[in-house]
Amino acid sequence: MPMSSAFKDRLFPALKSIVEHYGTPFHIYDEIGIRETGRSLKHAFSELPGFREFFAVKALPNPRILEIMQDMGFGFDCSSITELLLSRRIGAKPEDIMFTSNNTSREEFLCADAAGGCILNLDDITLLPKVPRLPELICFRYNPGPRRTGNDIIGNPVDAKYGVSHDQILDAYRQAREMGARRFGLHTMLASNELNYAYMVQTAEMLLSLIEWLHSEIDIVFEFINIGGGLGIPYRPEEPRLDLAAMAGGIRAALDRFTAGNNYAPQLYMESGRYMSGPHGVLVTTAINRKNIYRKYIGVDACMSALMRPGMYDAYHHIDVLDKDEAAGTEIVDVVGSLCENNDKFAVERPLPSIDEGDILVIHDTGAHGHAMGFNYNGKLRPQELLLKADGTVERIRRAETPADYFATLDFTPDIFKP
Ligand SMILES: *Cc1c(COP(=O)(O)O)cnc(C)c1O
Image (cartoon, rainbow, N blue to C red; front, top):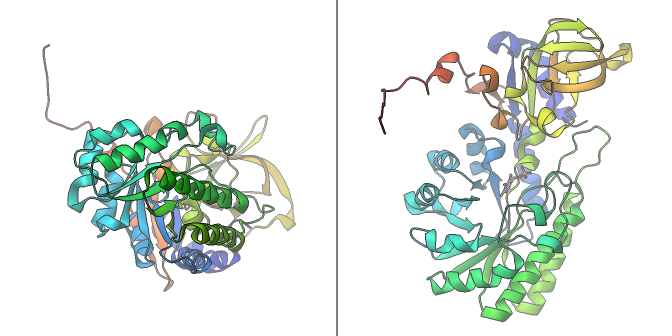
Protein backbone atom coordinates (compact mmCIF):
# COMPACT_ATOMS: atom_id res chain seq x y z
CA MET A 1 0.00 0.00 0.00
CA PRO A 2 1.24 3.51 -0.71
CA MET A 3 0.15 4.73 2.74
CA SER A 4 1.94 2.56 5.31
CA SER A 5 -0.08 0.18 7.42
CA ALA A 6 1.45 1.81 10.50
CA PHE A 7 0.12 5.23 9.45
CA LYS A 8 -3.28 3.63 8.82
CA ASP A 9 -3.23 2.03 12.25
CA ARG A 10 -2.47 5.39 13.82
CA LEU A 11 -4.99 7.37 11.80
CA PHE A 12 -8.00 5.27 10.89
CA PRO A 13 -9.27 4.39 14.39
CA ALA A 14 -9.26 8.11 15.27
CA LEU A 15 -10.36 9.49 11.93
CA LYS A 16 -14.10 9.75 12.59
CA SER A 17 -13.51 11.85 15.67
CA ILE A 18 -10.89 13.99 13.91
CA VAL A 19 -13.42 14.62 11.12
CA GLU A 20 -16.07 15.52 13.69
CA HIS A 21 -13.73 17.96 15.40
CA TYR A 22 -12.16 19.71 12.39
CA GLY A 23 -14.61 19.01 9.56
CA THR A 24 -13.47 18.00 6.07
CA PRO A 25 -11.59 18.48 3.82
CA PHE A 26 -8.07 18.45 5.28
CA HIS A 27 -4.62 17.14 4.64
CA ILE A 28 -3.21 15.33 7.65
CA TYR A 29 0.50 14.57 8.06
CA ASP A 30 2.07 11.84 10.16
CA GLU A 31 4.95 13.06 12.32
CA ILE A 32 6.10 9.54 13.23
CA GLY A 33 6.27 8.50 9.57
CA ILE A 34 8.21 11.62 8.55
CA ARG A 35 10.70 11.05 11.37
CA GLU A 36 11.12 7.37 10.46
CA THR A 37 11.86 8.25 6.84
CA GLY A 38 14.32 10.92 7.99
CA ARG A 39 16.07 8.42 10.24
CA SER A 40 16.29 5.81 7.47
CA LEU A 41 17.71 8.39 5.06
CA LYS A 42 20.38 9.44 7.56
CA HIS A 43 21.11 5.82 8.39
CA ALA A 44 21.52 4.83 4.72
CA PHE A 45 24.14 7.56 4.19
CA SER A 46 25.67 7.47 7.67
CA GLU A 47 29.02 6.29 6.34
CA LEU A 48 29.41 9.38 4.21
CA PRO A 49 30.84 12.15 6.39
CA GLY A 50 29.01 15.41 5.93
CA PHE A 51 25.99 13.88 4.22
CA ARG A 52 23.08 16.29 4.42
CA GLU A 53 19.50 16.45 3.24
CA PHE A 54 18.13 19.90 2.37
CA PHE A 55 14.36 19.36 2.45
CA ALA A 56 12.74 20.82 -0.68
CA VAL A 57 10.46 23.40 0.94
CA LYS A 58 8.15 23.55 -2.07
CA ALA A 59 6.95 20.01 -1.35
CA LEU A 60 5.35 20.87 2.01
CA PRO A 61 5.92 24.50 2.96
CA ASN A 62 4.51 24.50 6.47
CA PRO A 63 6.60 25.86 9.37
CA ARG A 64 5.55 23.04 11.72
CA ILE A 65 6.78 20.49 9.17
CA LEU A 66 9.97 22.46 8.55
CA GLU A 67 10.61 22.41 12.31
CA ILE A 68 10.49 18.60 12.25
CA MET A 69 13.00 18.58 9.38
CA GLN A 70 15.22 21.02 11.26
CA ASP A 71 15.04 18.89 14.39
CA MET A 72 16.38 15.97 12.32
CA GLY A 73 19.34 18.13 11.25
CA PHE A 74 18.14 18.81 7.73
CA GLY A 75 18.58 22.04 5.83
CA PHE A 76 16.19 23.63 3.36
CA ASP A 77 16.15 23.86 -0.41
CA CYS A 78 14.43 27.12 -1.36
CA SER A 79 13.65 28.64 -4.72
CA SER A 80 11.62 31.74 -3.93
CA ILE A 81 11.57 34.70 -1.60
CA THR A 82 8.66 33.22 0.33
CA GLU A 83 10.45 29.91 0.83
CA LEU A 84 13.53 31.78 2.09
CA LEU A 85 11.34 33.70 4.54
CA LEU A 86 9.62 30.50 5.70
CA SER A 87 12.95 28.83 6.40
CA ARG A 88 14.37 31.85 8.22
CA ARG A 89 11.17 32.19 10.22
CA ILE A 90 11.90 28.89 11.93
CA GLY A 91 15.51 29.88 12.53
CA ALA A 92 17.38 28.35 9.59
CA LYS A 93 20.97 29.64 9.45
CA PRO A 94 22.83 30.66 6.26
CA GLU A 95 24.50 27.24 5.96
CA ASP A 96 21.11 25.53 6.35
CA ILE A 97 19.63 27.12 3.23
CA MET A 98 20.38 26.16 -0.36
CA PHE A 99 18.86 28.70 -2.76
CA THR A 100 18.23 26.99 -6.09
CA SER A 101 16.37 29.51 -8.17
CA ASN A 102 15.78 29.61 -11.90
CA ASN A 103 15.35 32.78 -13.97
CA THR A 104 16.35 34.61 -10.81
CA SER A 105 15.33 38.23 -10.25
CA ARG A 106 17.32 40.93 -8.47
CA GLU A 107 14.76 40.91 -5.63
CA GLU A 108 15.40 37.19 -5.14
CA PHE A 109 19.16 37.69 -5.05
CA LEU A 110 18.78 40.47 -2.50
CA CYS A 111 16.59 38.28 -0.31
CA ALA A 112 19.02 35.36 -0.63
CA ASP A 113 21.80 37.70 0.54
CA ALA A 114 19.81 39.07 3.49
CA ALA A 115 20.07 37.72 7.05
CA GLY A 116 23.62 36.48 6.54
CA GLY A 117 22.98 34.94 3.11
CA CYS A 118 22.72 31.28 2.19
CA ILE A 119 24.33 28.73 -0.10
CA LEU A 120 23.79 30.24 -3.53
CA ASN A 121 23.19 27.73 -6.31
CA LEU A 122 23.33 29.61 -9.62
CA ASP A 123 21.29 28.46 -12.58
CA ASP A 124 23.24 30.22 -15.35
CA ILE A 125 26.64 31.71 -16.12
CA THR A 126 25.06 35.08 -17.01
CA LEU A 127 23.79 35.44 -13.45
CA LEU A 128 27.30 35.84 -12.00
CA PRO A 129 27.61 39.60 -12.59
CA LYS A 130 24.01 40.06 -11.45
CA VAL A 131 24.61 38.69 -7.96
CA PRO A 132 24.60 41.83 -5.78
CA ARG A 133 27.30 40.50 -3.43
CA LEU A 134 29.03 37.33 -4.51
CA PRO A 135 29.46 34.98 -1.54
CA GLU A 136 32.66 33.07 -0.92
CA LEU A 137 30.86 29.76 -1.54
CA ILE A 138 29.33 29.32 -4.99
CA CYS A 139 27.52 26.39 -6.52
CA PHE A 140 26.22 25.94 -10.06
CA ARG A 141 23.35 23.80 -11.25
CA TYR A 142 24.60 21.59 -14.08
CA ASN A 143 22.49 20.55 -17.06
CA PRO A 144 24.16 17.67 -18.93
CA GLY A 145 21.95 18.13 -22.02
CA PRO A 146 22.25 15.19 -24.43
CA ARG A 147 24.73 13.45 -22.14
CA ARG A 148 21.87 12.15 -19.97
CA THR A 149 18.25 11.23 -20.48
CA GLY A 150 15.76 12.26 -17.84
CA ASN A 151 12.57 10.47 -16.96
CA ASP A 152 8.98 10.84 -18.15
CA ILE A 153 7.98 13.26 -15.45
CA ILE A 154 10.76 15.82 -15.61
CA GLY A 155 11.59 15.32 -19.31
CA ASN A 156 14.97 15.28 -21.02
CA PRO A 157 17.77 17.60 -19.89
CA VAL A 158 18.13 19.06 -23.43
CA ASP A 159 14.57 20.37 -23.21
CA ALA A 160 14.89 21.64 -19.66
CA LYS A 161 15.20 25.35 -18.86
CA TYR A 162 17.38 24.59 -15.85
CA GLY A 163 21.07 24.74 -15.26
CA VAL A 164 24.37 25.55 -16.93
CA SER A 165 25.22 23.69 -20.13
CA HIS A 166 28.22 21.42 -20.37
CA ASP A 167 30.03 23.86 -22.66
CA GLN A 168 29.67 26.68 -20.15
CA ILE A 169 30.32 24.95 -16.85
CA LEU A 170 34.11 25.35 -16.86
CA ASP A 171 33.88 29.06 -17.65
CA ALA A 172 31.22 29.46 -15.00
CA TYR A 173 33.57 28.29 -12.23
CA ARG A 174 36.53 30.14 -13.72
CA GLN A 175 34.58 33.41 -13.74
CA ALA A 176 33.23 32.81 -10.26
CA ARG A 177 36.77 32.37 -8.98
CA GLU A 178 37.94 35.50 -10.78
CA MET A 179 35.12 37.37 -9.12
CA GLY A 180 36.20 36.24 -5.67
CA ALA A 181 34.54 32.88 -4.99
CA ARG A 182 36.82 30.66 -2.91
CA ARG A 183 34.65 27.67 -2.03
CA PHE A 184 32.71 25.55 -4.52
CA GLY A 185 29.89 23.07 -4.87
CA LEU A 186 28.20 21.40 -7.83
CA HIS A 187 24.48 20.66 -8.17
CA THR A 188 22.15 18.93 -10.55
CA MET A 189 18.52 17.83 -10.57
CA LEU A 190 17.60 15.50 -13.39
CA ALA A 191 14.88 13.13 -12.28
CA SER A 192 11.48 13.35 -10.69
CA ASN A 193 9.75 10.54 -8.83
CA GLU A 194 12.54 8.17 -9.90
CA LEU A 195 12.16 4.67 -8.44
CA ASN A 196 15.29 3.25 -10.04
CA TYR A 197 18.16 3.72 -7.60
CA ALA A 198 20.74 3.16 -10.34
CA TYR A 199 19.70 6.43 -11.98
CA MET A 200 20.56 8.35 -8.83
CA VAL A 201 23.91 6.54 -8.54
CA GLN A 202 24.69 7.49 -12.14
CA THR A 203 23.88 11.10 -11.30
CA ALA A 204 26.40 11.07 -8.45
CA GLU A 205 28.97 9.42 -10.74
CA MET A 206 28.35 12.07 -13.39
CA LEU A 207 28.94 14.88 -10.87
CA LEU A 208 32.08 13.21 -9.52
CA SER A 209 33.64 12.83 -12.94
CA LEU A 210 32.72 16.44 -13.69
CA ILE A 211 34.44 17.81 -10.59
CA GLU A 212 37.47 15.66 -11.36
CA TRP A 213 37.67 17.26 -14.80
CA LEU A 214 37.02 20.78 -13.46
CA HIS A 215 39.79 20.28 -10.93
CA SER A 216 42.21 19.14 -13.62
CA GLU A 217 41.38 22.21 -15.74
CA ILE A 218 41.31 25.01 -13.19
CA ASP A 219 42.55 23.46 -9.97
CA ILE A 220 39.52 24.01 -7.78
CA VAL A 221 38.40 21.64 -5.06
CA PHE A 222 34.72 20.95 -4.44
CA GLU A 223 33.27 20.90 -0.94
CA PHE A 224 30.10 19.15 -1.98
CA ILE A 225 28.09 17.59 -4.75
CA ASN A 226 24.31 17.92 -4.58
CA ILE A 227 22.38 15.27 -6.49
CA GLY A 228 19.09 17.18 -6.13
CA GLY A 229 15.76 15.64 -5.27
CA GLY A 230 13.62 13.36 -7.36
CA LEU A 231 13.76 10.20 -5.27
CA GLY A 232 10.53 8.41 -6.03
CA ILE A 233 7.77 6.89 -3.93
CA PRO A 234 5.37 4.14 -5.03
CA TYR A 235 1.98 5.74 -5.66
CA ARG A 236 0.48 2.45 -6.84
CA PRO A 237 0.13 -0.49 -4.47
CA GLU A 238 1.98 -2.86 -6.83
CA GLU A 239 4.98 -0.56 -7.40
CA PRO A 240 8.27 -1.47 -5.71
CA ARG A 241 9.97 1.00 -3.40
CA LEU A 242 13.17 2.79 -4.23
CA ASP A 243 16.07 0.68 -2.92
CA LEU A 244 17.66 3.31 -0.67
CA ALA A 245 20.35 0.97 0.67
CA ALA A 246 21.46 0.05 -2.86
CA MET A 247 21.49 3.71 -3.84
CA ALA A 248 23.61 4.63 -0.82
CA GLY A 249 25.94 1.67 -1.48
CA GLY A 250 26.41 2.67 -5.13
CA ILE A 251 27.13 6.29 -4.28
CA ARG A 252 29.51 5.27 -1.52
CA ALA A 253 31.43 3.03 -3.93
CA ALA A 254 31.66 5.90 -6.41
CA LEU A 255 32.92 8.23 -3.68
CA ASP A 256 35.48 5.65 -2.56
CA ARG A 257 36.81 5.38 -6.13
CA PHE A 258 36.92 9.16 -6.33
CA THR A 259 38.78 9.47 -3.02
CA ALA A 260 41.35 6.89 -4.09
CA GLY A 261 42.13 8.88 -7.24
CA ASN A 262 41.90 12.40 -5.83
CA ASN A 263 42.87 12.19 -2.17
CA TYR A 264 39.77 13.97 -0.99
CA ALA A 265 36.03 13.45 -1.04
CA PRO A 266 33.31 16.04 -1.45
CA GLN A 267 30.33 15.87 0.88
CA LEU A 268 27.10 14.46 -0.51
CA TYR A 269 24.02 16.66 -0.36
CA MET A 270 20.54 15.93 -1.56
CA GLU A 271 17.28 17.84 -1.55
CA SER A 272 14.42 15.39 -1.47
CA GLY A 273 10.91 16.65 -1.06
CA ARG A 274 8.57 13.88 -2.12
CA TYR A 275 10.61 11.07 -0.60
CA MET A 276 10.64 12.74 2.81
CA SER A 277 7.00 13.70 3.18
CA GLY A 278 4.93 12.34 0.26
CA PRO A 279 3.69 9.06 1.78
CA HIS A 280 3.16 10.66 5.18
CA GLY A 281 0.18 12.79 4.25
CA VAL A 282 -3.36 12.04 3.11
CA LEU A 283 -6.25 14.18 1.94
CA VAL A 284 -9.42 13.41 3.86
CA THR A 285 -12.65 14.39 2.14
CA THR A 286 -16.36 13.58 2.43
CA ALA A 287 -18.59 12.25 -0.35
CA ILE A 288 -21.37 14.81 -0.76
CA ASN A 289 -23.01 13.79 -4.04
CA ARG A 290 -23.54 10.73 -6.20
CA LYS A 291 -24.39 11.11 -9.82
CA ASN A 292 -25.20 8.50 -12.48
CA ILE A 293 -24.99 9.68 -16.08
CA TYR A 294 -22.76 8.07 -18.70
CA ARG A 295 -20.41 7.23 -15.84
CA LYS A 296 -20.89 7.11 -12.10
CA TYR A 297 -19.52 10.11 -10.25
CA ILE A 298 -18.74 10.50 -6.58
CA GLY A 299 -18.61 14.20 -5.74
CA VAL A 300 -16.45 15.05 -2.74
CA ASP A 301 -15.99 18.24 -0.70
CA ALA A 302 -12.37 18.74 -1.82
CA CYS A 303 -11.32 19.75 -5.32
CA MET A 304 -8.19 20.40 -7.37
CA SER A 305 -7.35 23.36 -5.14
CA ALA A 306 -6.30 20.75 -2.55
CA LEU A 307 -4.46 18.37 -4.88
CA MET A 308 -3.44 19.18 -8.43
CA ARG A 309 -1.40 16.12 -9.29
CA PRO A 310 -4.16 13.94 -10.79
CA GLY A 311 -5.44 16.76 -12.99
CA MET A 312 -2.04 18.16 -13.86
CA TYR A 313 0.00 15.00 -14.37
CA ASP A 314 -2.66 12.33 -14.66
CA ALA A 315 -1.10 11.01 -11.46
CA TYR A 316 -2.51 7.99 -9.64
CA HIS A 317 -3.40 8.48 -5.97
CA HIS A 318 -4.68 5.46 -4.11
CA ILE A 319 -8.01 5.92 -2.31
CA ASP A 320 -9.50 4.19 0.73
CA VAL A 321 -13.09 4.53 1.84
CA LEU A 322 -13.19 4.57 5.63
CA ASP A 323 -14.81 1.45 7.13
CA LYS A 324 -15.55 -0.10 3.73
CA ASP A 325 -13.39 -2.59 1.97
CA GLU A 326 -13.36 -4.05 -1.48
CA ALA A 327 -14.26 -7.55 -0.30
CA ALA A 328 -17.90 -6.46 -0.19
CA GLY A 329 -17.78 -5.67 -3.92
CA THR A 330 -16.73 -2.65 -5.93
CA GLU A 331 -18.15 -0.29 -8.51
CA ILE A 332 -16.33 1.75 -11.12
CA VAL A 333 -16.51 5.47 -10.39
CA ASP A 334 -14.87 8.82 -11.04
CA VAL A 335 -14.13 10.72 -7.82
CA VAL A 336 -14.54 14.40 -8.61
CA GLY A 337 -14.31 17.88 -7.14
CA SER A 338 -16.50 20.89 -7.84
CA LEU A 339 -14.31 22.92 -10.21
CA CYS A 340 -15.49 23.90 -13.70
CA GLU A 341 -12.69 21.83 -15.21
CA ASN A 342 -13.23 18.29 -16.36
CA ASN A 343 -9.81 17.24 -15.11
CA ASP A 344 -10.87 18.07 -11.55
CA LYS A 345 -10.88 14.36 -10.69
CA PHE A 346 -9.05 12.47 -7.96
CA ALA A 347 -9.71 9.12 -9.66
CA VAL A 348 -10.95 8.11 -13.09
CA GLU A 349 -12.84 4.85 -13.71
CA ARG A 350 -11.55 3.46 -10.43
CA PRO A 351 -13.00 0.34 -8.81
CA LEU A 352 -13.91 1.38 -5.25
CA PRO A 353 -16.24 0.00 -2.58
CA SER A 354 -19.77 1.28 -3.10
CA ILE A 355 -19.73 4.84 -1.75
CA ASP A 356 -22.66 6.56 -0.05
CA GLU A 357 -23.07 10.24 0.66
CA GLY A 358 -21.37 10.99 3.97
CA ASP A 359 -18.64 8.40 3.48
CA ILE A 360 -15.11 9.54 4.25
CA LEU A 361 -12.51 9.09 1.52
CA VAL A 362 -8.79 9.00 2.24
CA ILE A 363 -6.63 9.99 -0.72
CA HIS A 364 -3.08 8.72 -0.23
CA ASP A 365 0.34 10.28 -0.75
CA THR A 366 -0.58 13.95 -0.51
CA GLY A 367 2.30 14.83 1.83
CA ALA A 368 4.38 16.38 -0.97
CA HIS A 369 3.32 18.65 -3.83
CA GLY A 370 -0.25 18.38 -2.52
CA HIS A 371 -1.59 21.37 -0.61
CA ALA A 372 1.42 23.35 -1.80
CA MET A 373 0.38 23.22 -5.45
CA GLY A 374 -3.19 24.30 -4.82
CA PHE A 375 -4.58 27.39 -6.48
CA ASN A 376 -7.59 29.69 -6.28
CA TYR A 377 -8.95 29.25 -9.79
CA ASN A 378 -12.73 29.37 -9.88
CA GLY A 379 -12.62 31.04 -6.47
CA LYS A 380 -11.92 27.70 -4.85
CA LEU A 381 -10.18 27.89 -1.50
CA ARG A 382 -7.42 25.72 -0.11
CA PRO A 383 -8.22 23.43 2.82
CA GLN A 384 -6.73 23.23 6.30
CA GLU A 385 -3.67 21.14 7.17
CA LEU A 386 -3.43 19.01 10.30
CA LEU A 387 -0.51 17.25 11.95
CA LEU A 388 -0.90 13.88 13.68
CA LYS A 389 1.81 14.23 16.28
CA ALA A 390 4.01 11.57 17.78
CA ASP A 391 2.05 11.73 21.07
CA GLY A 392 -1.20 10.94 19.27
CA THR A 393 -2.64 14.45 19.47
CA VAL A 394 -3.70 16.36 16.39
CA GLU A 395 -2.78 19.99 15.74
CA ARG A 396 -4.17 22.31 13.09
CA ILE A 397 -1.06 23.69 11.39
CA ARG A 398 -2.80 25.76 8.74
CA ARG A 399 -6.38 26.95 8.76
CA ALA A 400 -8.58 26.69 5.70
CA GLU A 401 -8.70 29.71 3.44
CA THR A 402 -11.79 31.90 3.67
CA PRO A 403 -13.40 34.26 1.17
CA ALA A 404 -11.74 37.08 3.15
CA ASP A 405 -8.32 35.66 2.17
CA TYR A 406 -9.42 35.69 -1.45
CA PHE A 407 -10.62 39.28 -1.20
CA ALA A 408 -7.46 40.43 0.63
CA THR A 409 -5.69 41.23 -2.64
CA LEU A 410 -8.66 43.23 -3.87
CA ASP A 411 -8.86 45.52 -0.87
CA PHE A 412 -6.21 48.22 -1.16
CA THR A 413 -5.76 51.98 -1.35
CA PRO A 414 -6.85 53.17 -4.80
CA ASP A 415 -3.95 53.92 -7.14
CA ILE A 416 -5.17 55.71 -10.23
CA PHE A 417 -2.70 56.93 -12.84
CA LYS A 418 -3.22 58.89 -16.03
CA PRO A 419 -0.34 58.14 -18.40
C1 LIG B 1 11.32 20.20 -6.90
C2 LIG B 1 12.75 20.21 -6.57
C3 LIG B 1 13.25 19.34 -5.59
C4 LIG B 1 12.42 18.31 -4.89
O1 LIG B 1 11.91 17.37 -5.76
P1 LIG B 1 11.22 16.04 -5.19
O2 LIG B 1 10.78 15.35 -6.44
O3 LIG B 1 10.10 16.48 -4.34
O4 LIG B 1 12.26 15.29 -4.44
C5 LIG B 1 14.59 19.44 -5.27
N1 LIG B 1 15.40 20.33 -5.88
C6 LIG B 1 14.94 21.18 -6.81
C7 LIG B 1 15.89 22.14 -7.42
C8 LIG B 1 13.62 21.15 -7.20
O5 LIG B 1 13.17 21.99 -8.14
